[in-house]
Structures are given as C-alpha cells and as structure tokens.
Amino acid sequence: MIALRPAPAAALALAALAVAAPDPAAALEFERVSYEEGVATDRVFCLHEDRVGFLWLGTMYGLVRWDGHEWRTFRHDPRDPASLSNDDIVTIAEDARGDLWLGTYGGGVNRYDRRAGRFDRFTDVSSGLQKRLRPRLRRGAVAPLDSGVSKTY
Image (cartoon, rainbow, N blue to C red; front, side):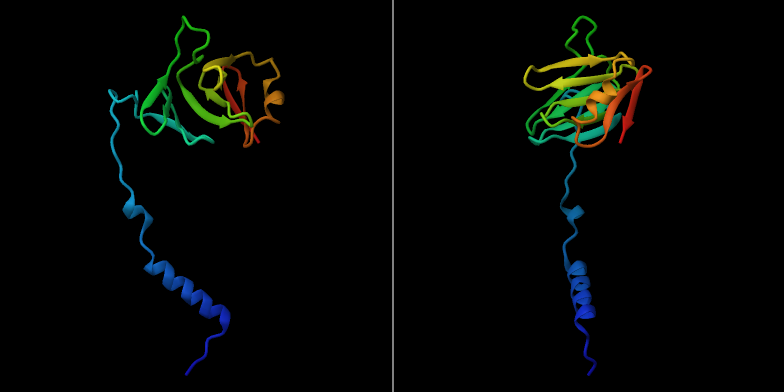
C-alpha cells in the first residue's frame, strides 16, 4: 500500500471537496427589469453596492438605485441645481461618510449627499478637487478632467 504524505493527502481531499461542491452559479436566478419598473436603459457603465446594501447603477441615462424593493432613477434636471450635472455616470465611489462620488462623461464629478438627499456638482477643473478627494475615498479617487473624469490611485 502506498502511504500519502500529509500535504498531498490534504490537497487530494480539497480537490475532492471542490468537485463535490454544488455549483454556486446553478442557484442564481436572473430577472429582467423593464423601463416601467424604473431602469431607464440597459447601458450600465458601473455598479456599486454601498455600505447599507443598496445597489447603484451608473447608466447612460442617470443614476439608478435598487434598495431591495424598488428602483429609483436620478437624472439631470436643468431647472434643479441639486440634480446631477450630467446623466452619463461612468464611475461610482463611496467615501468614509457614506456619500457617493459619481464621475460623469462630460459633466465633471457629483457628490450625492445622503443626509440632504441632493447632489453637489464639481465641474471646475481648476478647483483642486482631486487633491481634496484623495484622503476621503477608500478606493481610488475621481476628479474632473476637462469636462470628463479622471481616476487616480
């Protein structure tokens, strides 16, 4: 009889478990969400799950939030200075306070202030925003560059 050393035996046991384990993808279910249900487009550029479990989608037609029960879309409104500066949301980051920072294509950066329920716009590339944001974001920073957005590390 051949005796296995502990390391190969452990590796063999792990391999057997991996083969016998159920496929996690087999349990996934997908459901289409229509425009009428609250998602304005199928052009999603980025996703972010925030610290409270909300799912945020950056789309070509605004910012979409799924709270587990309903969809809500935030859009640019030229008559409302507390709305998004631009609907093309290409990147989402969350800072230490839980506010969302949104990089847009052509509209600079927006901060979603959760407590106030409004957006603050940062579209001036000479504002030094990049240096002010770097310490506040957990992963990478977004900052206005020309009329678009730049990500720093």
